[in-house]
Structure formats: C-alpha cells, structure tokens
Image: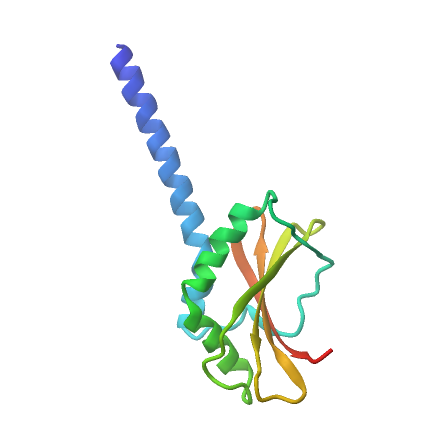
Length: 151
C-alpha cells in the first residue's frame, strides 16, 4: 500500500513537472517561430514605452532573464531578420550584444535590451532591440527596434 501511494505521488510530481516545463518552453520561442514565418506584427519601430528601472543582479528576475536571453542568443539570425525587415540602410551581420534589463513593476514587464554598433555611421551610434517580456507568462510579447543617436 505504501508503495502504491509512493508511486502515485511520484507519478503526480512527474506529470506536474512535465506540464510546467512544456508550458514554459512553448511560450518562450513563439516569437522565433513568428519571425521565421515572416510575421513581424509584434515588432515595432521606436523605443519601448515603459517606465522602467534597470535591474541589478542578483534579483528575483535573474532566472527569467537568463531563460529569455538563452532564447534570444540561441537565435541570432532572428535579430538580423528583424533589422532587415525594418531598416533598409542598416548593414548586414551586425553583432548584437546584451546591454541590460529593466523592469516596469506597474505593468509587470521586463525589458531586455540588445545593442549593435554601427561602425560607419556619423549620425547613429548603433541599433537597439528591446524585447518586452511578460513577467507572469515568461513570454516575449513585443520587440521594439530603434536607431540610437550619438550622445
């Protein structure tokens, strides 16, 4: 009898863990699938309109940021596709580097910012991509792209 209870409990833990793993994985990479299919409906030119503050590590958001960074940095060609779609005069093969993450506590969004230097531009220092992530769903909801002027 104790063995049956143990097996049932173990099975329940396994099913629950599997569900959460599938749930967390399926949301993170939807943005990649959309871009691969040519759907840029969630990508916008401009700066993300969030009142956010920079997240200092360690924080409660480190795990979320790490997971989303893995998705982004594991698919660098997606950043090139975004730039090619929105920017005619941006050179190919830009190298985007993770810049920082910020938090909009009111809207419960984390924004991951990536930056690529434009070496031959006299007007723009580079290009930034801002990935807006829902804190509760752990999903990229929107991507903003902007050319950054020299300061």
